[in-house]
Length: 586
Image (cartoon, rainbow, N blue to C red; front, side):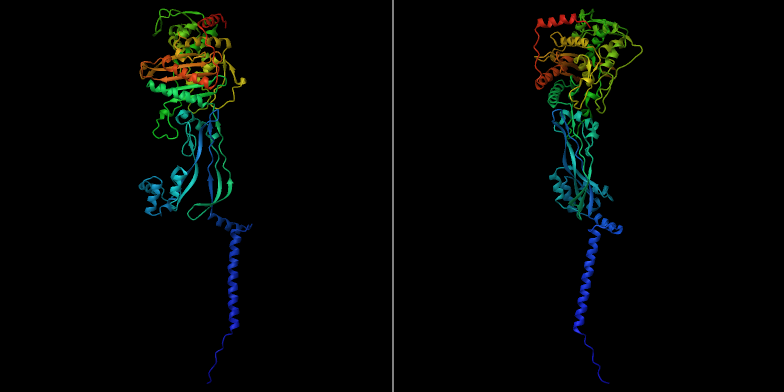
């Protein structure tokens, strides 16, 4: 058999096949790229393509909350009292962070100023969770130290922290916010809805470690909160706080407070309390130091009510400022109790009863009036009802109402026992007298000047002026409130020294020193109340402890507000005013 020859392949056909396969492979790759682009990039309306496109985005794009800025709180002159500053908060995905090495966790704990054991406990606590805070409200430098470690599962978010530039000076009035920047106490709580903004949302691109690498479209803009302008004048607030703090310390008192009202508008210009606290660092702050005593604490006003009793006597038509009242022999017996004066003042007129703060004299006036006359007047002046400040926890006080009054109850009522008020209520009542009988609403928020249509006449003007003249005599050399005098200005006011209540009734050796008044008496601008609780030194009378605070603060206030001084009356002029007062008819 002959040998069979093998057929040799043709080189041209092999090259053609190779080229065809190569072209087909390139076309296939191009088609794949185009298909991916069509699914991920090109806009398509088909439902299937849209679903796949969204799935692709879901693996790279996240929606994050944009923190809203909380509105600032300022005083009437625009001085910042509370402002939110941007800070960084660090959070982690516990499942990712648990995969980090021991050395990385130790360095992270050091950057966070934590013990490694505490970080380990927190990771264990949030096992199987996807979110936990590491540290909140850090400065950019502090947060940067932790983020620079580049540990998987550690992220940051922008938040806001509240800062109070005035610190403890106005702490009880403003209150404070919690770590989420929501109001917890004071005006921060009362106006939380007004101050709080509305968070927004924004789309961002994240890398594999969860870090933001690109900001995309904003889904919803964050709406900042609205600013709040208070009626407070920080110049007067500093004056009141400084003098109050000094007086409480010098007398080793338990606490103290001072309220200043603008008599023309009803605006609260100052509201200071002692002891206080630092709202920027509340660690270790006592709960009692956080109370706004001017609105939350209620107390028996004592002799500061006597001028209002005299006003009720004038309204009755049975008394004039010069009506004689015999206080001899220096005491008066009522069923179950004897009321005494420090000395036998003998014959006084109604004005003299207020000047000397005679317990016997004011009791005789009260016994001569109808039982409910006093209560009706006190209520008209704003006692027994909240002033409507909107402050959380504001008390209305106690103004008892009885169908039948026991004689001692009538007497106690006339000189400020058996009833309770807060300091703002008492200052408000005195501002009515200062305003010649016009009552204006009290406001902690700037009201815009006290419009006449907001004023309500509750007392006839001539009667209010007569009581003002009586109150001026209290500040004179023979009165109990001479330490409240301000050189160059006429001052009207009344002292009060109140026995404190213990578990067994009134305590003989514990007192509350009070002063209430307004300035200038001839054209009133400011009304104020000072309360010093439980002074421990030998001095405890209102005229010795509380009145000097009023005098010192009002002297500075007159200068700051540029109120021109009143020419100080000579003894002859004072006598002439007294004779004029005696001739005044209601």
